[in-house]
Each structure stands twice: as structure tokens, then as C-alpha cells.
Length: 465
Image (cartoon, rainbow, N blue to C red; front, side, top):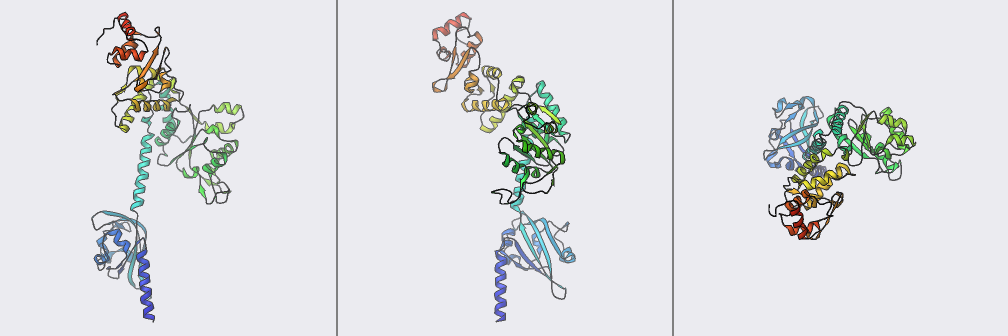
């Protein structure tokens, strides 16, 4: 009965080992493989028949004990040290490629302390390596997205912004970015972070206007289990997640007085407390805040703490609205066209003079973001190599004084004009866009073909080009 039970226990143990996700194999005192579970077959490509009786050198481990492996079994330091724990290395698959694994190994000794074998386990971390590469790629792309060169503009106001970014990047001072919506505050914050000494750390963005007071508190500071209804587990907040990096607090003017007090303590003490606990946790972070509001006016209205205001504006940066730097519009348009060409596969070269004039005349209440959306809108409609006025959004076409662009059937555009506002240059542009087809030009002007001929005669414009 004992022999039967021993055999049953042995089979049961083998089944358990075969069911394990980790690879498990054993060696005898001579370094020969004596057992090989199914996960080892999956990880290495060797069947148990191919592996048993061989030495572990068939796996060509890249390292053990910080030394090159394989080596002779007699010189293996595992015998001297007795164990290997959590050693990350590579093994050579049967098909010739490397497999990243985490290796553990232990000597097995008898009651007399003599070595009778070795048991080793391997964890395949291919998926983990792939995930690491994806994270590294995301970080690389983020760094490229927020590169200094991606902030477009050669105007005087933008030169001041560039100088401020460079100065802020060389320090760890708290930065307050002020600018209207759509001016690129997050892009400036990213440029500061990724150009600075803490660029290897994370950059965490929190939109303070998108969350209620309680949710924002939990988002920033984290919470412990049971702190409030629904807090089923401990959770680290954004300040902790950004340790060693930067927290970008967008729309800082929207936070409540209670959150203002807690944020002031973070800026003063560089410590946080999770919601529901009193343990102080140190954080090594840089804070960059942004707002479209006049924080000083909010201070005067007692809606924003004065001490917090001065803590935030250690290094203020103002981003000018697009209407104050219109000389940058052609550069921005070229930048957006290049990006959309790559994205859509189109080959649009530029804007027509008429389209660019409209872009320059518009006031851009939505700033750079609105300009980008306008160019993307034009890409949807444009089927030529240049963006025309008719391709731009309606609100931009209507803004030009003296005439108004409006939609016409079949995707064309009508230019409704008074006789006093029509100029020779405008007529020449329209004739060129219509291939000198007088009837089409007349339709787009909303006048008769005879009227077009009269204007051409009046301004000495030839009937054919």
C-alpha cells in the first residue's frame, strides 16, 4: 500500500508541475536534466525527450551571477552559492531566437547535506518585454510631440515664449502658464518638462475643471480603502504617480477653496496625504499650472487664495493669442498641411491667396486649435493641390468685409458682392479659379455673365488668359 501511495503522490506532483505556467526542470548531481514540464517545452521549443539527459547548456543562458553562461557544470557558481533568485536573462530557443526569462534556481540536498540535484524555474517575460517597449515608444513619441520645435512661430511675442521655456526648463521652479483656450498651454508645459532635467520622469496632466471637488481630491491625492463610498481599495493619486516628474494642472483657476488649501500645502511641504489617512507621503514633483483666467482678478474678488497665487506664479509665462501674432499663421498652416498630408495621403501644397487672406483677416477666438480645425475642415473638402477659400469653414468665409461666402449646390461656393466692393484683383482671382469661365465666375459672384464682361472691359481684363 505504501508503494502504491508513493507512486500516486509522485504522479500527482508531476501533474501539478505540468499544470504550472512557469517552466520547471530538474538536474541531477552531474548536471544532467532529469525532468522537464510542459511549460518548458512551450518556452524553449525542446520536448522532454529532447531535453532529458542533456545538460542545461542547451539553453545557452545569457547570464548567471553576472557572468557569461553556459559554463562547465563543475564551475557553476550555483553549486557554491546554493541559489539564484529573480535573475533576468535570455535563453536560446530551439529555433534560434532569444527568449527573455526570469530565472530561479535552488540546490537540493539530502539529509547528510550532500547535493543530489538542482531545481530551476523559468518565467517567460516576453509579454512584459513587449509592454516595456511599448511604454518606451510612447515616452519617445510624447517627447517628440512636446519637442521645442513643435511650437510654431517666429513672431516677436513667440520669441519671448521660447526664451521663457528655455529658462523654465533649466530650473525646477513652479511655473504658471497663462493664455486663452487653444493657445497651446499644454504644449508649452510639455516642452518645459521634456527639455528639463526631470524629463525621464512622468508628466501627468490633470484638467481641474473636468472634475468635482471630491473627485479632484481623490484624483490628485489618492485615497485609502473605505475613505468614501465606492473606495474598495487603496489608490495612489496623481501626485504620487508623478514622483520624479511633473504634474500639469490645467485650468487651475477652477479649483475650490478646499482644494486650494491642500494644493498650497503640497507646494510648501512637498508632502501629500491620501484621502482617509493621516500618513504624510513625500513627493518629488514639479508643478506646472495653467489657466485662461485672470488669477489676480480672482484674488481681488476673493475667489482665489493670494498665498497660493504667489506660490504658483514663481515663474509666469504668457502665451499670446493668435490674433496678436498673425505673422505666424502661414507657418502654422504649412505645419498643419504637412501633418495632414502625412495622415491622409493627400498632396496639398498650400493655400490660395484668397484663402490665406481670409485666414489672415479672421480674429481666431479659438486660437491655434481653431486654426488647426479649420485646415482639417479644408482637407475634407479640398480635391486640388491648393486649399481654396471655398474649402474653409463658413464662419471664416463670412468674416471678410464687403462680401460673404456661402454654400452653393454641388459643393461650389457663391460670393455675394455689392458692385462697390468688387475689385479688379478679386475678379482676376475668381476668373483664375474658374478657368476663365465667365459663366461660372458670374454664378459665384451672384451676377449675370453680361455684368462680368462689363467689369472686365472696365478694368481692361482680357477675355482669355
